[in-house]
Amino acid sequence: MTRNNQIPNKLKLVRIMAEEKKIEQLDKDFFKRTDAFINVANDLTKEHDLGKVSASLLYAAARFNAYIVASSADDKAEADRNKVEAIEYFTEQYRSMLIANMDDYIEKYDEYLKR
Image (tube, rainbow, N blue to C red):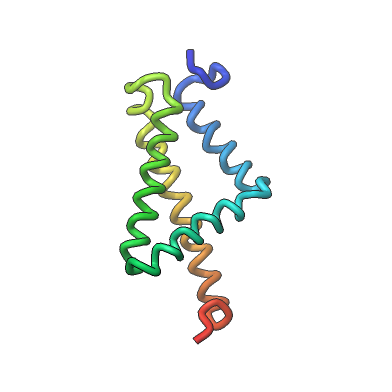
């Protein structure tokens, strides 16, 4: 038995990921939280170069997402079984978000990067 709604291991992770996607689409505070992280990153660029801040932000996201996957499992073996699927999910999410944001910056280059 698993803790979250008695769902078998693999299905539980799929359900968590699907619910996160729905929440992201419906959550009114999504962009408030996003802006809070961006503001922290922007503040850090006052003392550190962009590449180092970017690397730290990526590492923090990876660390936090690893925690989410591990803490949603009932034991170490379940966390290990969920690893590949979680990596695929988070990698695809990042890729999709990066593409969308790159497209947005290219489309609105002059507006966003007033030079």
